Structures are given as C-alpha cells and as structure tokens.
Image (cartoon, rainbow, N blue to C red):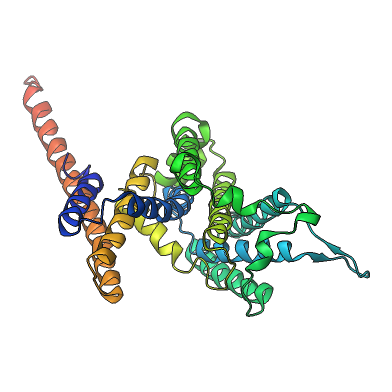
Length: 348
C-alpha cells in the first residue's frame, strides 16, 4: 500500500516539510500561484499520459506550446490578405480555435509518422521539437508580442485576458481547465472502448491487434490529443504572462513526463491513471515552489527535481521486480500443491 500510494505520501511529506520551514508556504497567495503553475504542467501531463500508456513518448509538446502562442500572437496582429492592402483581424474565439487546431495538427503529423510509417516516437517527436521551435522563431522574428494581445475595441477582438487570465470563484482559469480535462480523460480511459483499446495496446500491441483493436487509429488519436493539450497551455500561458515569447514552453515536456512517471505510470506502457498524473504534477509544483520559498539556488532545484524523478522510476522498477518474484513463487507453490494432490498412476 505504501508503494502504490507513494506519490500521495510524497506530496503530504513535501507540503508538511515546507510548511514547517516557512510560514509563507501555505498562504492564500502562494497556494494560488502554485495551483496556477501546477495546472499548466498537469494539462500537458494528461496528454502525455495517453502517449505513455501506449508505450510512446512526445518530446514536442513544449515546442507546441511556444508555436501555439506565436500563432495566436500573430493573429492578434492581423493577417495580411494576399494581393491586397487589407488586414484581417479575427475575433478572439476564432484565434483560440485556430491556435488549438495548430497544436492538434502538430500532434496529427506526429501520430501519422509514428503509426503509419512505424517510425520511433522518440525520433519523430524530437524532430518535431526542432521544427515547432523553429517555426516559433520564424513567426515572432525575434520580437515579443505584447500590446497586440489586448485587441482593439473598434475591431471587436478584445476580451482575451478577461477570459483566459480570469479567476472564477478565486481559482485561476487554468485550474478549471485542468479539472475539466481530468474528468473527461478519466471517463475516456475508464468508461469508453477507446480507453480499453489504449491500455490493451500499451500492454501488448500484437495481442491487441490480433484482438481487433484499431491500433494505428488509437496511436494517431493520442498524439492529436497530446497536441491539443499543449495548445491549450499555449493559450493560457500567453494570457498569464501577457506576452508571446520565443522561449515559451521550454522544458515543459520534461516536467510532463516527470509528472506521469511520479504518478505511477509505466514508461513501457499499459499502466497509469489520471489521478496519479495529477498527484505527480502537484508533487513537482509544491516541491519547486517550496525550494524557492526557502531560498534554495535554482541550480540545486534542478538537482533535487531530477533526483525525485530517478527515485520514482527506481521505486517503480523495484515494485515490478518484487511483483514478478511473488508471481514466480506463487506459481511454484501452486505447481507443488497440484503435484501432491495428484494420485500416483496404478501399477501395471
């Protein structure tokens, strides 16, 4: 029970430790800041969970966040209509939909290359990381987009910050998006055929294929959903920092993978839950904030975070080894019991 609930136990220990070390740790303002940052990581981690359940990996989500922010920023600047002097200024809802579709398109390309051409997920998403980051640099051209995000009253494209930087009931909008996605993904994994297909594919791809599971469709769809989650974070982040920058989303993919692993998912696929992923994101968020609160150097923060990830993977590996040994001992005991209960053959 201790091993299975290790992420929750770690979260409780972290919160208790830093609450004792600093009286400012559990204040309302600091908790709001933590939840906001946790939500960004958790939303991406939910998409990463689907990919890891399938036995894959998506290293392009951080760059997709930056690309989405750059696309949204340029849409606020306006689109020049070809062969004319006209400039088109889309409304906010159009900008949001187009930006999310861009993220889904990145995921679809990843899924298509991985599922249809049988390319390695690590190589494909690593290449897409550079492609998306390069396109972000091209769209921004070395300039941050800030003032344009507010829109213009006469054009009817204002209200972006009023929605995506708001805090309904005192809770950041990113936290509400995290909760809604967590509920949807939980239902998707536990109550739908797609969820059963995903777990089956991650556990044994060949067996799932022989059982009639549309393996390639499942693999493509999970990368589309991962790109969608990254795009949502891109929209929320530019609203949070009031700017679209070229380095937006850097290292988000590593934090997302860490949250999924700390939450108990197996990198080999077939095992993991939404609940564990959210707890893993909370562990990273509360740990990082606590280290800042007590004045730990940013360099040591990375060391501690990396050590926590290694420890989580090590505990998971030890758990699997112990489970295999228990199963082997149980099988031997059953074999001996059946041998003793079988009567000897009659003499000729």
